[in-house]
Length: 142
Image (cartoon, rainbow, N blue to C red; front, side, top):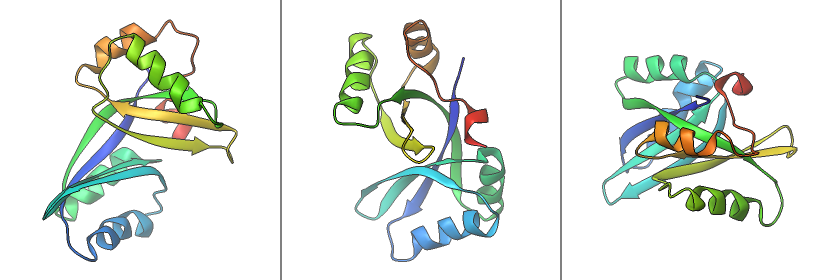
């Protein structure tokens, strides 16, 4: 199964929190390739796609952050109008529900990937693996 790891951090929704979180990555030479923030009043979840997820996970844990590392699928899409629609249509056609997502644009806009989490990633992989689509893998992020 071709997957990438997403870091998911639980955080208070306060000024300066994002700076403290990203400082951990910056001070350790970890590159952020994509991220999303979802907040509800006083708390939120920040999801990161980084080039060194295992190292980042360890550093966040050591720094006292509530963090988890989750597998996600990354499907290549065209970086042009309609590119996301084509990928979303394919995922929908397989009956897969997207729980959270982010977009990673690679190689100076030569490639883009729709990276998403779903409840049953193994089932989603089985439904998508034979399609004519390129998948993002962890080795592609280094």
